[in-house]
Amino acid sequence: MVSQAKNLTGFFFLLYFLPLALLLFVILASTTMDLPFGIFTRDLAATAEVNPLTGVTSNVGALLWAAAATICFLTWEVFRHQPKEKWFAVFMLCSGLLTTLLLCDDFFMLHDYIFPRYLAIKEKFFLLAYFSLMFCWMVVFRKCILKTQYLILLLAFVFFALSVLVDQFQTPIEAFIGDSRILFEDGFKLIGIVSWLGYFFKCCLLKINENILE
Image (cartoon, rainbow, N blue to C red; front, side, top):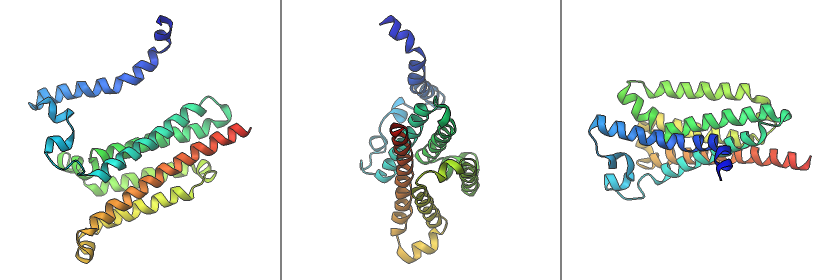
């Protein structure tokens, strides 16, 4: 058991660092802001006393983002030690980091609430930044992407673009279809996230099958 613990030292650090850092943040934030611990630790629906189904599609979207990021990081770990798959591994690592960024932004409402309200950074700045980041990602890894089933990725971009368009033209669209606008906006985003997850699932599966056949 002692030798096993020594071998797992690095893994234990990676495994428990983030949750312990989060708990430390909760303690500091609770003390500094004079808020009860439950504000940070309890379920949102219980704290706000709202229907448990409140924001269900948003929460499912966050789970799908997390699943996509997990696939990317796992694929990177599997192939990073294979010399001929080094660049593909880098592609999956960067894709995992990009997906994690999108997850954090979506889940914590960074670009549409936190930054505009507390840092006075407009939402359009983030949309431009994300567009630029996505464009750079596609240019840098274009050779990897072209070897994959990129039609799924294109569909993801189409649905994300539709969601952004509905969001940017809220007033005229709402005047035409009423409250259904939000269903289209969030529905397009959810299908886009599903497509994003499906793309990286296929990337991982195809690469594993290629190496098995060899």
